[in-house]
Length: 240
Ligand SMILES: C[S@@+](CC[C@H](N)C(=O)[O-])C[C@H]1O[C@@H](n2cnc3c(N)ncnc32)[C@H](O)[C@@H]1O
Image (cartoon, rainbow, N blue to C red):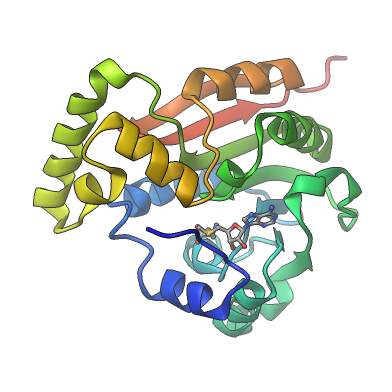
């Protein structure tokens, strides 16, 4: 896949048309993420989505949690325009902010009690240093006891295990009629080149957990399918 410029309306349209064939785990992991929010959401609280895109996740979320309120951030006017169309029936339930997450510290959020922050397939566009800043921002934004959920691509780091990834991607392709094995690259060096050409900067799983812990979270990976992870971070409750 070539460089993904989400500000390009053609890329926004392509993402809307097909956001599964590159990632057959997406719908199951999204269902897990929404399950975790649905289990604990309290009306009146806010949910922050870093990378709302075209509103696909919110459409699923509002279906399962009809009273949910979301503040969604994205840098792409083309993606946000599509979100506005998609989420018309839920116009009172979300606020969209155009902002570049590489400068997250200048993001001015509306004043709410944020019980959840989540990010789906977005933060892998940030460098390691920007991720450190983002995790601190997320920690500071959440109310005590709040939950951060990351669903994202993580780095494939072990060249000696690349054949195992390939076999499991080929299995996914067999089950889901997808093309992951080819799209991710036949060899480890092909894979690294493809990831770089796409403009992705995924961190390894251990690094995510390390950075989340350093930001103050209690952190764990809840689900991992090859290089797609659902990671959770809990901000501690206030102690009396
Ligand atoms: C693959 S899409 C995912 C959208 C949505 N979370 C979903 O799962 O359907 C990635 C999104 O991240 C946004 N994005 C990428 N880099 C960004 C940045 N630096 N700041 C804000 N948004 C960014 C893109 O505009 C795009 O909407």
